[in-house]
Amino acid sequence: MTNIFVGNLDSSATEEQLRNLFAPYGAVDSVTIVKDRDTGDTRGFAFIEMGDPAHAEAAIASLDGVLLNQRTIRVNEARAKLDRDPTRSSSARDHRRHQI
Image (cartoon, rainbow, N blue to C red; front, side, top):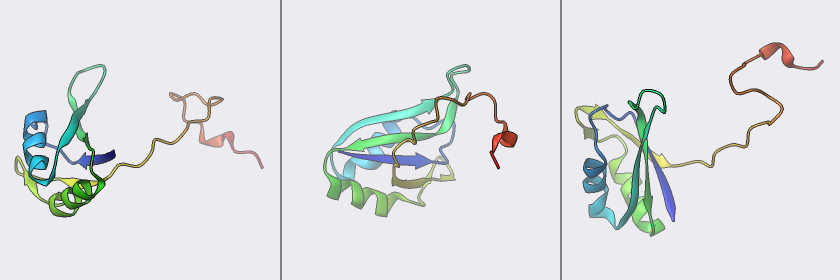
């Protein structure tokens, strides 16, 4: 399973549009447009899952930089989410916390 990141999405982009864009390259297992949890507005990016790594690579190579709803989208393999330090608050960004 290959997870693909699609960035710079227009707010009107739909899951169906993304599925149709990627379908010519192989089976699309899932499409998830990321939305703001408070407002429900799209955050401008999505994740596509494709089962065949070769199909995913072909889609990435072909679709990176194409126009979707008059915007140039960025397409690449998604990176793993970094583990966060549980001792740090996610809402407080205290850059003076460094020890010397």
